[in-house]
Length: 440
Ligand code: NAD
Image (cartoon, rainbow, N blue to C red; front, side, top):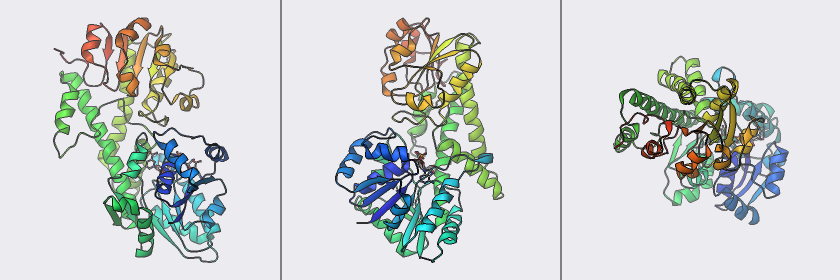
């Protein structure tokens, strides 16, 4: 069993560290945030992720998983160090890797015996060499180490499942010794016959961006198809279903909506486009996806405005769903942010409700009204916008909703409400690519 440290205890570091400890490895999750570490040591989760609390408690109680902000000691006590800190959008769309750089410096200063340093954070293609050079700069005693790239593909909301049952594990390395060490970490996946793809470091870094940008592109594509459906009277739900039945296409990521958000697609597409330009190539497809996604978010605002008579002034609108997707508390780059800020800017008022993400959104919009149920949030409002497809909104009674609101006006940006029922209840409504369909 390996002694492993994860530096960065966010969505990726906490889920991966917990998952790896479940296979019997001894894992230290280290973070710069004392508050986060205190919460974890006190038995509270700083993030919401289904199934994480149970798995974490099990491994914490078994003594395989611990939490610390003493990053230096964690480095010295481990054979393998995973870097899992954030890499947010930086200047000109490029990835801001300053946290990764500062972690590399701490590793260089504290390396005391041979270690494998493995990056899980999404870093621009070519960053591996840069990280190695920083470690070398501060590693004054020239203690040997190897560098590995092991990009992560988990999705928030189903992160535990994605991590424990991955489609593939990509390991970019420079020699057999470090490759074998990381393979050993993932041994239980091996038993499950999961494909481990061994590549060079730069190829592993490239795989992560190429995969994420492709998924973003797929979403933008179906969003644009949906928009055209609106103009031509076709129903995007049937179009997407038929497309998805084609094995060459697959039904995944073919759900039109208000534009992708979250902590990965928006920043990773921008970083990929910026990186390609710097390297003498223009990725026209990715640039188009970025633009299309921004347009889609604004298109939702226009739809909402049209539904309330062309002006948000003095209108009170209930936003149902704040997280960028269901089953997470993450609101980073969520489409609801653009919707809320546009309504407020134009003199409207917001009631907001999310089953989990109210608290996260309070850090962005402190002044809007938050509620603890959709019923409370929709009382006496001029209109409702469904922004996240939480299950409880799928099963919402639109008869009850109508009774609560001033007038039945609904924007369903996730296409989860039955159009037939909305027509029967005489709602004024809109959605993405289905609104003008003739319903039998
Ligand atoms: P996050 O913001 O949730 O967590 C990052 C953590 O790193 C925070 O707890 C922060 O306090 C800590 N940190 C920052 N600087 C530090 C430092 N110098 N030393 C120690 N800790 C430090 O980020 P995340 O969503 O977990 O993403 C981490 C990386 O993984 C990013 O590169 C991201 O692109 C990538 N990724 C994310 C996902 C996802 O779904 N969130 C999926 C795949 C890959």
